[in-house]
Length: 142
Image 1 (cartoon, rainbow, N blue to C red):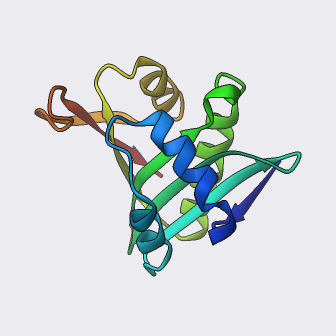
Image 2: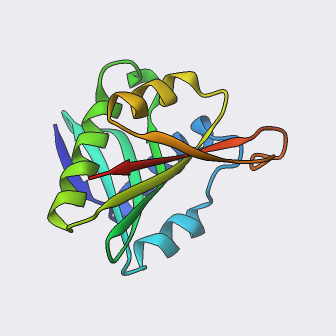
């Protein structure tokens, strides 16, 4: 298992996972824009030469926001989400981040359970953030 910085060779697979994971997926252009943003860290998880998942985090001063995190549907429930969150926390520690934020669909019970295992706490709600559903705002203090 290894984490690599995003490169264009991964773009099609990342977009495929994105389209199968989110109701409002990011476009290729959005991923390419994020790759070129100095405040963004974009990594892919590779296992046995297979792209398993990816994450995109925004880092500014002592705060970080998880913008995107997804695992290919064929590899879910195999601890790869835990591996990605562990890597994010490692990056946060190196960057001396004090707080990590994210939004998650209120109905995404599996993700909520995982985030809570990692110490994320609910701090608010964004009403109708996903048009028909609220988003929970989570925060992790390091």
